[in-house]
Structures are given as C-alpha cells and as structure tokens.
Image (cartoon, rainbow over all chains, first blue to last red):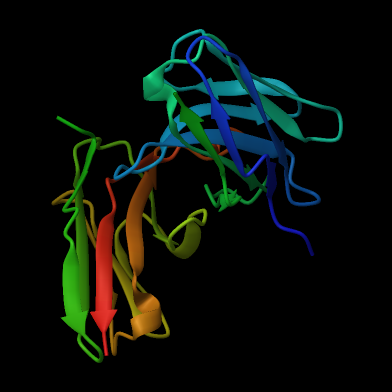
Length: 114
Length: 114
C-alpha cells in the first residue's frame, strides 16, 4: 500500500518566484497537514485540511496558501519566495476518527531558494 | 521561550548502550505525546504514541510521560547502529477533526557506533 507521496522531491527557485508542492495522502485518509522543516530544526505546522476545508493554520505569512481536492490530495503554494523559505516541506496524512494525532509523513519536497 | 524544548545533541553512544532522549514543554493543554524518528533525507516516522501520563513499551523502546513535570522521555535499550537518526518529540493538545497540528521539538541527533 502506497504511503504519503510528495512531488517534486527537489526543486530550486529564485527569490520572488512562486512554487507549488503536491501531496497524495494514504488511501482512506481524509486529513492532510503541511509542515516546514528548516535544517537543524523540528517541523513547524503550516496548514491542516480536512474534507477540503482549512482546519488549522500556523504562524506563516499570507504568501503561503494551500487547498485540498475532492480526491483528498493537496497543494501547498508559496508566492514571492524569500531565501528563508528554503526548507524541507513535509506533507502528512491522518485517518479521521482515530481520536489520536497519528500523522504519517511523506519524504518531503526540498526547496532551495537562491 | 519555545513551547517544546529538546536537547539537539548530538549524542554518540556505543552499540548496546541505553539511550535516553528527553523533552520538556510548557503548554499544559498538551495531551498526546509522540516520538518520531527521522533518517537523513526522509520524512519523520512514528515510533511511539502516548496519551496523557504513564509509560508505554514497544520492543526496545519505552516512552514515559510525566505531565506533572511537563517532561517526556524515550529510552532505547540495546541500541543498534541502525538506530542512528534524528529523534523528534511531538505533542498535541487536541483530537477530533483538528488532528493536524503537532508541536515538535528541535530534534536530537543520535549516532550509535559499532
């Protein structure tokens, strides 16, 4: 059974550009969350979506946006890229109704902003 | 002050040693406590999950939660070179449909040498 898949795995952008990252959750998982992990730090919560609605937002600027599609896949968009946006972007999915915050993470998309 | 504090290490131990990893936190609302393992260039992988205070054992791994002291620990017995990774503690205050927000520690880099 496929886990959480993310694309692209690596990408390089320049300051001011826009980036779209994609995530496919585990089959049957309806909740998708996005995290940013800067080198040497733990992941930081960006967004959570459940049933195509935003259910949580972390302390990130409006340049960051996301959406969830009817098939529960998700996109994270970042506009006007800054050098500080260079990080590993992790997507995680979870099964509704478990009563627990058990997230399964993908391998991430590594973004470098030059 | 960060909500979750974790000694980043690095921690280097010989094979067979007992490893103790720790996190402290300040948010009394945290109820769910997790330990994730992250290998280089991979996403975090759930190791242990605990609700509220107490101990939980799974093979060579034991998780302890002391909510009165706001302190959690992960013990690894008979450590192996394959345990070499970054260990992340994570916590959450809510369940229900708002699963997605975990607050992570900085991560502890562990190396087990033969």
